[in-house]
Amino acid sequence: MTATSDRPRHRSRAATRFPIYRLVLRSQVTRARLLALLALGAVGIIVGAALGASNPAPALIDGLGLVDGHLAAGTRFVNTFGLSLLVPVTALVFAAASLGDPDEDGTLVYLWLRPVRRSRIVVAAAAASFTVAWPLVVVPLAVAAAATGGGRDLVVGTVASATVGLVAYTGLFCALGLVTKRSLVWGLLYIFIWEGFVATAADSAARLAVRTYARSVLSGIAELPLRGTVVDSPMRWIAPVAVGLVALAFATWRLARRDIA
Amino acid sequence: MSATEPVIEVEHVSKWFGELVAVSDVSFTVGPGVTALLGPNGAGKSTMLRMLCGLTPPSQGTVKVLGGDPRHDLQLTRRIGLVPQQESLFEGLSAYEFVHLAAVLTEVGDTDAATGAALGLVELDPDDRRAVGTYSKGMRQRVKVAQALVAHPQVVVLDEPLTGLDPRQRLHLITIFQRLGAEGRCVIVSSHVLDEVERFGSRVLVMAQGRLAAEGDYHAIRELMDDRPHRIRIRSDDPRSLAAGLLGGAGVVGVTLEGADATIVDTRDAALLRRSVAVVARDRNVRLNEVTPLDDDLESVFRYLVEGR
Image (cartoon, rainbow over all chains, first blue to last red; front, side, top):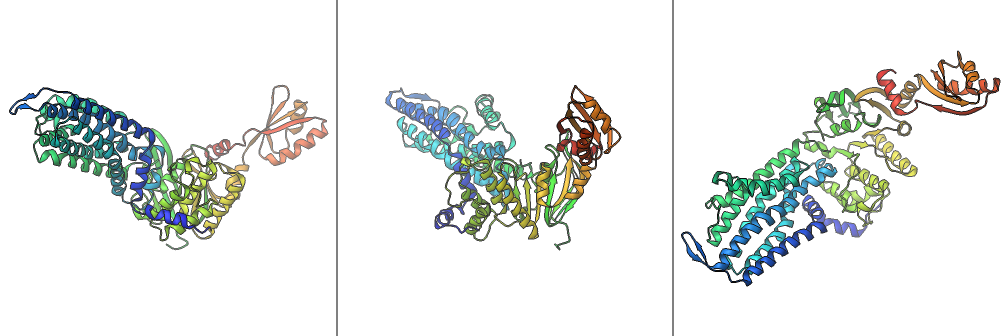
């Protein structure tokens, strides 16, 4: 029997709070992931700055007449780059790995075989993913939105829409990580084939895409109509959060019933 | 639960994965003390241990641990410690952090003291800040044992726990397992190494091809394994003369010649044959070059137990 020293005793005090959240958080933050996503965010800021430095002509919008060119270009950019690419891809990278990685490498057993509610494991994993993804997504997008010169509403709309989208995607991809070992492939197919292609074909299909709700939030706050903004308030706010929660409930159900390696 | 009641009850349990039958109609009970689950690779040992821990449900039959269903009774996990077979750990954590996490999640009273004690038990330094990802296989194995024991579980399930350990570490862990068994805990250890099982000094369950092939104490199993036809190859400078001398004696049931220098002997008493080979060789002035058992591997032993051949 070995007595513990003061150092680990002190060190472990913090570790007793939210241990699974902290564990997933640590395993999520890898240098490769951070560099790749920071680079993607930096591209957004550079493009935003380029848009801001340019002198776009005012845009003619149905029902609004002429709209400030910076606002129109900035909103379209946030929609195209941020809500269609950066938000879903970042959420996929972290959320799918949060439970998918430990499931695949067999370490999930060290969490599963403990008297811990399955919902606690899932929520902790999702919260850790959101914690890492949010600054990587929202900060560069907000900076990019500000750099376009689109104004305060565009920045607020960017932060709100990216956050709402991230909530839904985090839940969805967290569950996806427990459903398939090829979560990255299926996630990318969903993002680019379903959301980027199929969901643009009809309004009814668009309502089955997270991007539609996030885009509607952006459009509503920036007060600039975007193609495919078919969801009114408050549903544009409620639906993504509900999707995220339902997906986490499914992930909990799945975790409780699946085989653990 | 009284001391006489079984801790683990397995009744007519089968497990299949699609077309593959991993465990087929297995029944046994396990009480306090050390029980070894012996069998070759692919015998269904790990699947059985996973079912005991609730990690996978049986396709058929029932598994009860401490009277409860390990698959659905969350609180039961508090009383089960598992050393899984897979090597993966949370690679970025130190051994202390890894074991401490187990202590926290199991809601052990003094997590720091329990973590230090568990690491000390397996002779790891609680102050070692290196990530377990940098550890040797033997050290990782000991971390796994420490996390399984940190909450003092009543049932300890160890899937090939001695893999990767050097002889001294093996002996140390075997001593720990024996001590746990002597304390009245139910320790079930899987192994595919017969001699390893002997050192547990325990009751043995033999699994082969997904079935329970035999059960009893080590010596009974060993006798059962020895009491089967053995095939031995003897290389010499005069195999014909040697074959003639051996035929009809020493429990020999068949002799064939192989190549220019080998005699293949089937016998029911390998020990007696080994003794008589030397005598026959001396009497017939035959020079012996090599005596090799051809079916002493566990696969053939288990095959004999299951199929009688």
